[in-house]
Amino acid sequence: MPSLLPLLSLLLSSALFAPATPYAVLSPNSFPLPSMLSPGMSRKTSLHAKFERQQTPANFGSKVAASSKPKKEKASKAGAIGGFGSGGKLPKGVKVVRDKATTRFLKELASKGGSSVAKTLKRAGLATFATQEYGLLRGVVATADVKKGEPIIEIPYEVAVDLGKEGMGVAEAGARLLKAEIWEEYEAMLPPQGSPDVLGSSDFWSDEDLAALHLPHVASETAARKASIIDYASSAGIPPSDLSHASWLVTSRCLTVEGEQDSGERKKLLIPFLDMCNHDRRSPHVLTGRAADGGVLKVLAGKDVKKGEQICIRYGGGGEGNDRFIQDYGFVDDCVEAFDIVAKDLSAACSDAGFGSLKASLGRG
Image (cartoon, rainbow, N blue to C red; front, side, top):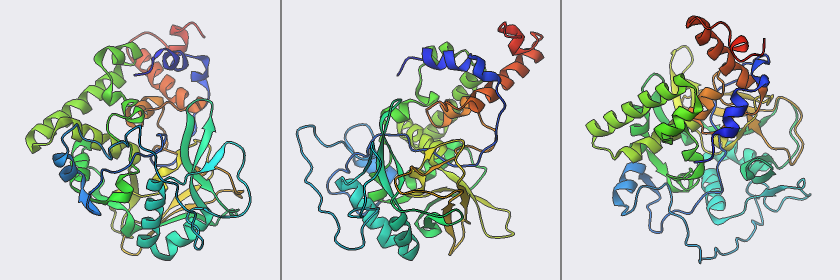
């Protein structure tokens, strides 16, 4: 668990008082390169069945032994996958991922997604981006120029993992994910249980760490969610650690998508490849599509995109701050708007408690 002091200093900085900007709905991908699946896994299996077979605590893919060296993959000669073998160099610090797990994932995605995915993999791929904050960060890169208004990513609804209608509790959604049939190549790309990205969420913090944050509403919301997961796990006969991990995958990766036209329904989906886009609150790109038979889930270019640019989207629901980011995703958005939202909530709480404005309470008025 990383030190909370940098987070505390940011949460209580003067940047808290900048204006806020709403953003769109989606989930993040700020996790390390994927681990490999255990050998012998069936091509399609439920996560819960996989957990039951493992002798060690549940993992979405066991790590390769440190002494083992993966064989080099040969670049595709035709139908390049995600920019493999494409001409021209990417910018410094950007490197297309060519490991075995990623290659298998992209090939299986192409086989399942038909023409929509074939077009996607001519325009975008998976890459690592060198960052000061996180080291190498995996994300989606443009492998060709894309004009404003054109689709960057297109994933058929049938390829997505549909967890059902919006409105269910996070524990129920997590339980559905554990029972869902997920193709193994996609499963291998999901963050494994106990990885640093997972543990960044306040759901996995100790009581002492939560108290050190000095945000009572985050502590109480986190405690309530933990309790609901433990209760559901007990009643359903699911190991609590498995359900906690699956529930985090739901909060951090699921996209809420409109269902059939005029149905009024909204579905919770995991969308392979699209859910590997990283977060940028100022991303101009547009998410569109329906969770319906024949539907295509798209990221449309909100500006002209050059080859080598990272394709980011805006996580959240249009008004969420870092209190939600640290709970649902496990990271802090360094954009001032994300801090401002927390400051406004705290200021309102101070006012309700008779302490005046937060700004005045901190001596900044």
